[in-house]
Length: 417
Ligand SMILES: [Zn+2]
Image 1 (cartoon, rainbow, N blue to C red):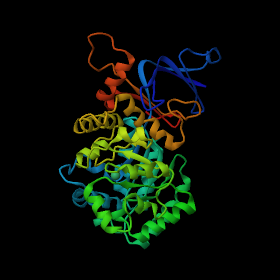
Image 2 (cartoon, helix red, strand yellow; image 1 turned 90 degrees about the horizontal axis):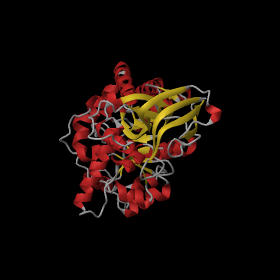
Image 3 (tube, protein in one colour; image 1 turned 90 degrees about the vertical axis):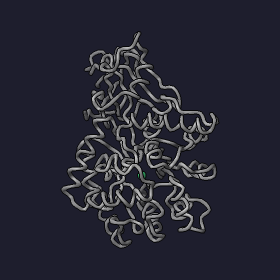
Image 4 (tube, rainbow, N blue to C red; image 1 turned 180 degrees about the vertical axis):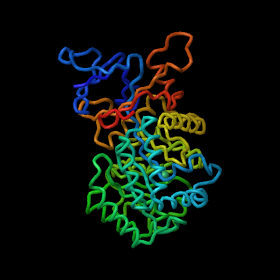
């Protein structure tokens, strides 16, 4: 038994966080046993890691990001999606044919995730099976868990295009080599409908069914993309149906963006148990739009957050949280207040518990969850005119924290920073 002490901030619901000041988390074998305001007698002799006046947040879940775009963070931000892909993205991803390059980049990438408190991810790699395995190794080494996918794309792929046969061979070889990982698992990753032939989508759908694999892709990010999908699949009334008809739109499928999904498409997300990975920083950077996140969450769509680097230029999920609040405020302004904006507590829920559910967790520091936690030291932030409440400090930390504020990180039950 081990105890962690500090001001505990839990996102138990889509709303205000639960705060336990000077509380304890009891952990045994990496698994949370309980959260206590006062130390139970039975635990009196257990060792305590005392973070005293610091804030103990839940570990962050980044539910959509492109690890292979880490080298191009902050680049090409003046281009719309399809031009951005052609000018920068495919050229960058093509570099991952070089395994030494992949090793260098993915090592720094994994370390950057941990430094910023991201303990679980659902990541795209590139088309390369070997580089994808290197990414999985580096995440596991750093203590990050989650899902990683080798990208499949056999059309409109520029430098990254594969033939269908190469893509099948590479995917099977990658899947066969994934057995050695314990906390990072494979997920099928058709890039998006415009990048995949019908044969590719059909093959991946059959593979998902045969092997019981989850799927991640993109949906309704940008208007030009949606028009392109309509031309490619005239038989489908809506974009989501291009995945559904091949068995790629089901429980635990992750669809990034859904910026322009209307109520019918949102209903399909709900009906099929699909997770919408909302990526606000990316949606603003590439001028994709402002997703009606609050409205979607209120309607019952399973929404969580993604950094979507490098469309998003911020890897830290605390930055993505505040980007999400700002984007929702822009939408509130544009709709004359018809769409309310997100509060810090709501954004925190989307960045933590909503994603953690994907991995089977209950919300907050629930008993039975493995410990994923981030300790924030806000002592370097400006001195207030009066002592701040823990809730005020939490809200300020969401805006002002940086890598240096992250004093400790626990991933999958172990201390990893
Ligand atoms: Zn993406």
